[in-house]
Image: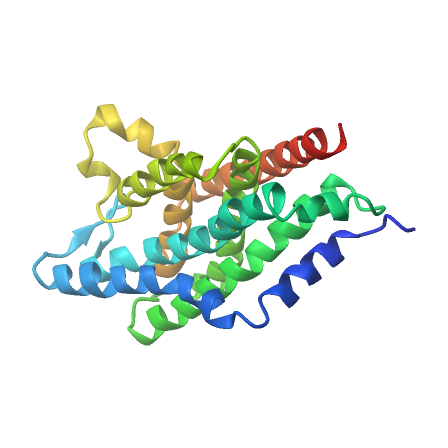
Length: 256
């Protein structure tokens, strides 16, 4: 019984830690909103309508908005399971203290990932309200957009935490930027997949954010197709793999 659901206390610790830093908590959704206004609306005024890969003709801003929603979920999850997680793992030794109790590495991984999902979910919900107010939500399927954002966040949180356990210093986080930034720009976020050279389309399709963008675009626009099932399965597998890998690495680093 002592070891039952101790991830709740890991989650509670994060909630209390951010209680007095609400401004920092909310700052993460600003970047996608700025992208939406500057590129989706500013550049969108100069760009003709966009034809999606499924043949739907929409405005450029409506095309970009679902991608920014997926990016909001990614940003919230990555912030907590990389930089913040690394600081607690290597410097404040937070997890050494936690694992001196009946809590296990699995509890640490689940608790931290759930906190990152709360953060990413808040970012996504705020962005969704902005997109709804601006008329970019065009389907009742959009009621699933927030659950989809949580799935996207879970996939990035698990893999982000797993990767962070291999980081040796803050300099290693240059690799995080090296991966996240190109993925943000080239995961069919600003242009349909069809405009990419065929030799690069396969690379785009293996990017996690691409599947998140496809899922959100289908839900917000009502552009439902069989490929979305593949995207959901991809993200579920990635989440499970990341959670498994992160818990094993935490165990190896702190219990051996």
